Length: 410
Ligand code: PLP
Image 1 (cartoon, helix red, strand yellow):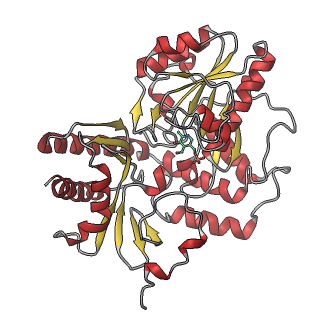
Image 2 (cartoon, helix red, strand yellow):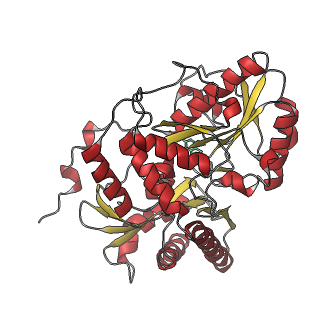
Image 3 (cartoon, protein in one colour):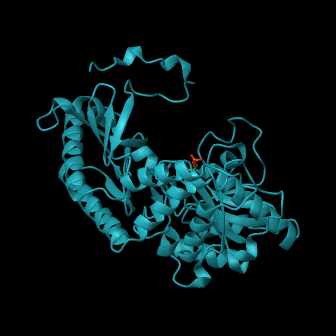
């Protein structure tokens, strides 16, 4: 069978919203993606930390096939068994009591913002502001862009939604200064993903929880990127919540919960789950075809030893990146679990990503193969492999990465 040439694909019909390389992906399996020409790529991007179990995992294929034959959607206006099962699993294995399902992380965060504003109106004299952070990324709807602290986003599509003053991560006084009687909540990513894997300190996160409790406002964690095992615990808040007084009031999930299908969740303690009928909804919320996948993902993560293996492999990847940093005189590596970044100490990240994807195949041992990495900053590479990535795959990625950095810096 002859492969289709890139030029033969009708690329003009898709909106040009990002710079895409001349590669069309047609298949995936585990840690590997295959393009239109049959070239194989070791994938350490995994749909931006989305494919928690790798490409096309058998448990997801089976769940989707079986559910598609049973029921695709009855409408969110009726109960369905898969949404009920998934909500129950999330409530059992987290500190939250109730869940609202939706399709994207931004939608889950919109829900969190609405819930905090409702809570502020009812319980805090009309408070509506939500303190968020410089560098934060909460999504691409107008409200979640306003909540984000991404440089330039305050003027893009202006005017913004009002009410999101920005504090500085790991600077508790910067938060203290912004909390007033208008504040309904503080919202934070335990590790800022899109801004380049910037973890908040555990002490800072505990201080933030204590501060929000003392000042009687809500504490929201955006775990769209860090949740569902990514950091080596089921949810990243488990790293800082030593007892119930440290627990957040609201958590949002996305990405990994759907293992590649559009599923996200807004989780809340009962005391703040204040929506009344008609205030929250959406055509696809709690769709059983997506929720059945969420159930399969939860079961996989809860299998004995799975989360420990994520933590172990995160440590292994971190150690290998640290050794490489010393060997090649790079800046440093950082991250939690299998959400890691390597600071190259120079603005060569895009060149390294390009080399790994397009030119590595000319190096010994990589014939016909490439490596997919992400560069969220000019000096930074981000690693977000499947949670079931093997140590051998990490070794192979390190081999390709080392070749590419050497070649680019030559
Ligand atoms: N929140 C965080 C922390 C994210 O990393 C992202 C996406 O990268 C989002 C929210 C938005 O999720 P989605 O793209 O599914 O709307």
